[in-house]
Image 1 (cartoon, rainbow, N blue to C red):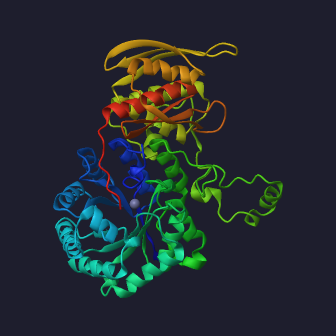
Image 2: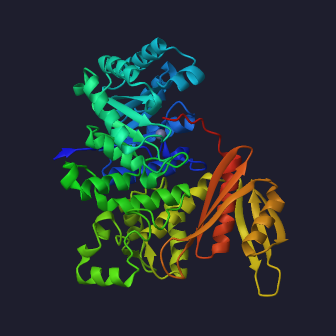
Image 3: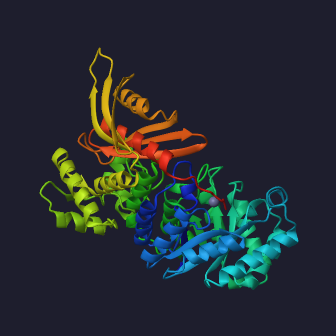
Length: 510
Ligand SMILES: [Zn+2]
């Protein structure tokens, strides 16, 4: 069967969601899971955006063996050369360069004429070819570009050496029939179209990113750009799991395949959700908690008698139920290390492993069964604590009682100095946040506070996400603990650390 190339841009486009910026370690963990999932191309970042992004791409290029590692680059010499340097060590490396081709972008943003845009696009592809044979070109805002001009640009960049041509609906404006036609027309009219793989990249502003992508596939596209959980700027990108499962479940219509190991979909979804702090809605297709739950009696009865009556896919085929009980109280350090390795988690040093193991033992005392999700959260917490030194929670005591005003007392370590604070609040979490603020005085605005159970049961760890905004920057913080007030304090401090420690990023959009 002919294969569709799955190009995952969770680490680049997905990271542009407000507050989803990831550390290098977090990006590497996701990249390893994407490789396990069988993604063909991992867009690891935008090398020229910041030294941190450059380093993350470079590290991912070193550790990933089977997937192609790609960096985005605007059509400028500096961007393309930074991308080329970043993927230098990749077993398979790609440079993805782009320039806008719509009138509105060329006139108002680039201030360039059509001729200048063509010339620059060709030049960028030639620079990229100095580093790798695998060069992708995107026409930003292709959806609002004139077809005649797109044909001209694409013929020129293919001539210059581009191997993949990506047609993005940057603003999420198209509908399936129109998008399919657009793809067919381009492939038909571009005279050297048979020399390249045609690709599509759709945004979800009208809820049609997946439908548009599939319409493009029906009309000749052989690469789809997508993200785990549909993460991405605004309403997000086409979701990888929906694209892959649609092609698989309706292979009678598509007659195409992918290299994805679908049983790794749910683990990938959970990992991305944990790291970015973006929860998955329960009714989300494929990866939502309710996606395979049959509540109504009629459905339950049907499924019990014969599962295909209401199920078009099997939960275990996409990785549900794969969260086997993995470790318990009596598990040793070796079992712990082995399980982390199987999950694609590699801690940097023996010290980091020891610290994580100590936390695991602590958790095993409070919680009888430890699942893979717990291990991800635990290590995440460890990494979070490692990378964020400015504020640390030392001690927390919260009194909460019916008829009494909740009261929190805590000790924070601020850059090596211990400070004590106390406050009252509307609830224990509110009191805790107020106590923290009385020390930090960040004046950040709390945009989101959410608690999720990492696994089921009342002894499960609570995973708290806190989203803060200050001076135009938005950050997410996470914390996990069997005590949700402690998890909340950790999450709030984690967000503050990100706000104070991490540099701002420059984000291009395709
Ligand atoms: Zn995009």
